[in-house]
Image (cartoon, rainbow, N blue to C red):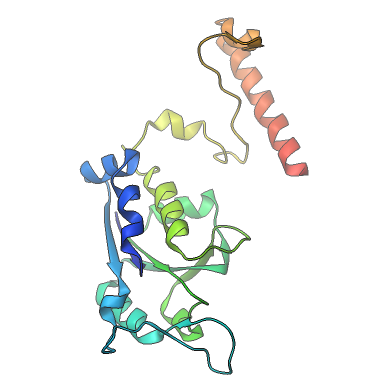
Amino acid sequence: MKISILTLFPNMFDGFLNESIIKRAISKGKVQIEIINFRDYSTSNNNQVDDTPYGGGAGMVLMCQPIFDCIESIKTDESLVVMLTPDGKKYNQTIAKEFLNIKHLILLCGHYEGFDERIKSIVDMQVSIGDYILTGGELPAMVISDSVIRLIDGVINKDSLLSESFEDNLYDYPVYTKPSNFRGLEVPDVLLSGDHKKINEWRIEKRINKTKYLNKE
């Protein structure tokens, strides 16, 4: 799988690419990630990528030319171009699994006041990671990349994936580790019993109750 991230701030991804699971996935050849500064595609003398909005208003708007040229230079028949924008489709685990089957995922990070509306004509999908405003699309690009990469076969343990939240529309069950008693806070007896049938029943019950409770909020 290949992920291309189009951004004006490539240095923001240094830590993301060089730590933990993502770094190991890249090292193992499970995923290829390229960070592209679409300012490099500007034809303006000063590498301009934004301008004032027609009709007036606050802020600067990302221009068509650099983004069109950037996307057209890397897009293939196997690519899916995703614009990261607050008014896009709400991202979830189902979409993450859909992205897993894409050979080349292109993530377009916005900034400033937003995109020229015509840029939407060159993307395949618009996605939002939540109902709040960020300074740019770089953090959403990391969130989406992380959620997809960890699903790639061989990146993390399969058993861990199967027991995670949202895999069957339920939140995960509570987990504990040693010691069994920490400052009077004790691990539930069932988890110390060695009775795997009862442990499994307890975990299912906790997942159901947790999901019901959180869905009420």
